[in-house]
Image (tube, helix red, strand yellow):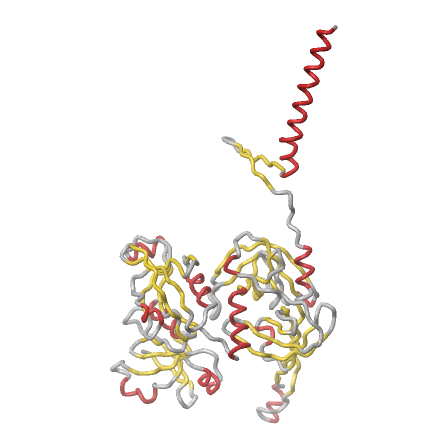
Amino acid sequence: MKRYASLFLVALLSGATTLGGYKLFVEKDFGKKSIITQASENYSRTVGIGPENIDFTLAAENTVHTVVHVKNVSVRTVYNPIMQFFYGSNGGAQQQEQIGTGSGVIISEDGYIVTNNHVIKDATELEVTLNNKKVYKAKLIGTDAKMDIALLKIDTEDKLPYSTFADSDQVKVGEWVLAVGNPYNLTSTVTAGIVSAKARNLDTNGIQSFLQTDAAVNPGNSGGALVNNRGELIGINTMISSPTGSYAGYSFAIPSNITRKIIEDIMEFGNVQRGALGIVGNEINGQTSKELGIKETQGYYISKVLKNSGAEKSGLQKGDVIIKLDNQPITTYPELTGYISAKRPNDRINVTVIRDGKNQVIPVTLVKNDIINTDFKGLELENIDASDKKRFKIDYGVKIKEVSNDRLKPYENELSGSIILTIDGAKAIDVETVSKLANDKGENQGVSIEMINKLGQIIRIII
């Protein structure tokens, strides 16, 4: 009997020890994480998942109070063709009011609001409705049509909730995001998704470095907020990719770093200060690498350095391959332009290039965009300035500074000072755009040019 009692006591102690060990080591770990087993035909592995679930409620609650509804009232003149027939060109003219809507984001407690330029374009009256239903008249402080950003201001004695800017360069593909806006006049609509891609190029005439997300964005969301799961502003929703005009899978936002720089420029200088690197080139991939006869398969190949540019002054050369700007890796043209777009003239950046098979870091001071110039078909071109835009009522183009083409020399007086608008139907946005167009055409290939001469007349020539 004593023998059985001893065995029972040993078994009891062994069981207690085992149970205690399980409680201490195994069950404790199960409390910390759940275990998912991923199995295939040949192997299996375990992956740990943290216990916290993604919770957007706080980010959503904070953001909806900073997103506003923007109402754009514009007036256009419409004509009755029958009245025109009887009473001439001005007969039957009527003023017709049009109303457009969009979203905006409060970025300061005293009432500054950022939205898209296309939301407020041609407005004769702007009205802003806050999430608490209060309505204010808004005034336009400034715009950047190229980057599709506008800054508004409302006057209020109340301190308003506002969104803080995050560093959009640090956003990761796959990161959860919220889109907040007013689609179809539905106030305070929140949708969730992930960042699908960064530095997305949509071949627009302005910004070429969008954040792409699969958060649902529809008409009316333009100008609204794209925020991370902490409620920080990482982008301004601006467009969708859809065959129907409604959400069909992807939407695009202007990165917060570009937006913030534009807004600060408008507030400090009254216009946007654009810094320029001053190069023309191509993205490198497997095929272009073979065509160029180089080993590198990623980066940006410099095919031309523009005159008077920071690139020229710093010693960047044709044949250099840019792989990094400061600490930002560069593999595509949108990544390069996106980084430069957040900089100003006289900003200094470190450009890492591959030259003769070796990495070099070259400091470059960016110059003002309208200082650099280029040669195109024997025409020395420079960017237009604010006075040119105002005089000719245009927002893009390049000015002919000098004529070196022998065939065009007899017409130098007429051509000098003229502003080129299009080349073979493509908009001549600036000298970098023209240089890229020239780079894509053969030296002896003819081109059709549309321009405004010094008298304001539209003329077309073929070179």
